[in-house]
Length: 117
Image 1 (cartoon, rainbow, N blue to C red):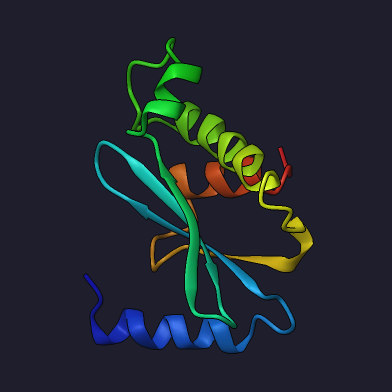
Image 2 (image 1 turned 90 degrees about the horizontal axis):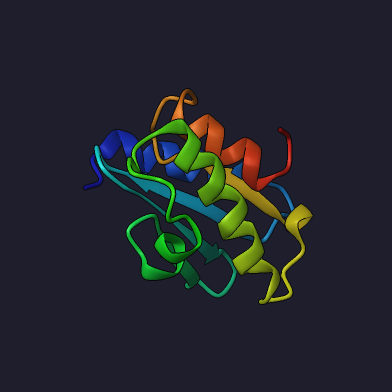
């Protein structure tokens, strides 16, 4: 999954994150998208979810294609609501696009997660 270029990018992202503690990490495939909250101090994954999870599918029965921009927007807001139960402040997070180009589904998820839309 990770090659040397991705590892170097990840090191740069974490070094330039400043005082922000939590990392929002995404992984996408041609059919689904996953998101995780990673605690950079304790080096643990706190929570993760995917568009293929039952919770997301129950809330979004009208979606037929989970690889669309519309589903990424809904998944971003769904994941944000799920994180609010952990009591983590959204301003203490930074976004890691995992080497994907900041375009399309990645951008839609980011904007809906951080309420930019």
